[in-house]
Length: 392
Ligand SMILES: *Cc1c(COP(=O)(O)O)cnc(C)c1O
Image (cartoon, rainbow, N blue to C red; front, side, top):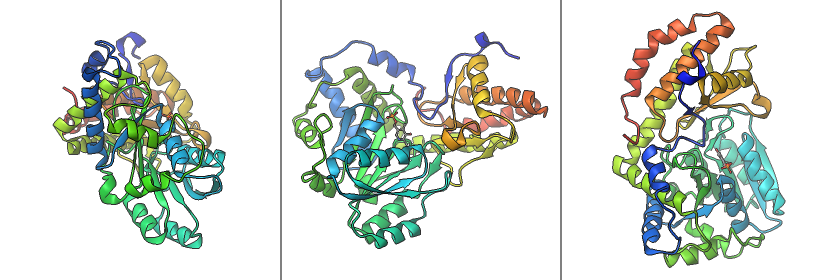
């Protein structure tokens, strides 16, 4: 058994993700004031890089607050108390949309899906036709708690075709991981977060509204002050932010976005796909099953064999191998582990994870999983090197 000291720290969670060294160094070079020409350059780069990743001509705003702040901004800028909304609840984050809208006084209908199942566009259509009063439909692109990808493009089409509702998408574990062109797919609200595909620390979130969502925002009456997107839009049009800004985070963001554009967004999608594919394939060889019926390229949930507690496995990974990943929540507590594929995951991190898992699974089942790992290690390394990581 390896000792702690032999294992450098590896972060393989579905957010926060590792921050590339080059980015960390630039972020901490110095602190710029947020109203200076030197900082403005980074801000403008960040805005335009976000538009590129979101696939939109609309402004993408930077909110100082984690992903949930952008979710709340969507709710309070687009709804009035009493509005009827439909929320796709397929896990923890869908439930968060529902609670937020309820707290603001909206009348929420939860469309509860079995965990691990994607939304069915035909059923969405039926629900929208049944109640023409819905003002908005809220969903995740990828429900991170179950690592399930929803058929976003089809859902957006159905919402346009069969209702007058706006379609708001929490794309926090999708934007920057898989194609999600906002304008082309006619998405009304798209949200992302700094600590996921944008590979900087937690603390910023991003939001863009479609033209018709901006029109709705003009009449929405829920309380807002700090999260008033219309006020922020006015400031942004002058090249400024409405309030102070954590400049190191924005500088890191600009550097990452420039790099993303330089290597090409398609290569980043390919890299996510590859990491997910490798995790599913070699996970099966260590006795894990893929949990979701619609697995996401951004995060994989692996189901453990009966009788093995994922919380304890995770604990040992952390303590003995210095590797952080996530377990399951609520009904999936103790049943799954979740491995993130976003950001700057290195090949050696993946190989170390599988080595550690093979040892832990061997200790629990008696099966020769470590031999199995040694047998596939070369093949795994070869597959991983098909698409290089984002940063050298
Ligand atoms: C991470 C995440 C969030 C945001 O959570 P915060 O803790 O507020 O950053 C929201 N939705 C999804 C799907 C996520 O994966």
